[in-house]
Image (cartoon, rainbow, N blue to C red):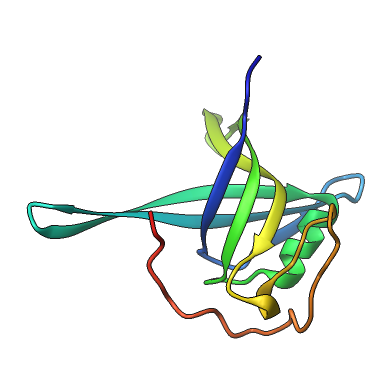
Length: 137
């Protein structure tokens, strides 16, 4: 038995990019920042980790419509590593989180569920990002 599950809570570093596969399936990609805060020798230390997230189908459409730079989101999915050739013909590898579930955080007006729930909540078109706050990890 094995498990491949990722749970992230973080903020978007930029608006999601939406593209479409050859057969018309929507694909959303975005970068999600998580941070870790600790105290060492009386000094506050902080490290930010960036995660590449990809969503497909209806979830990709929802991400493209409702997510924006600075928004805090919960993402649940799985890790996937794939390879590609860069412009110079060098084989590269990339690890990304394939999102299976996403929820906007920050209050009732910012909530959105994924295709499992399809509850998009009221007034999700607000362009105002939530206030900056430290994450508890």
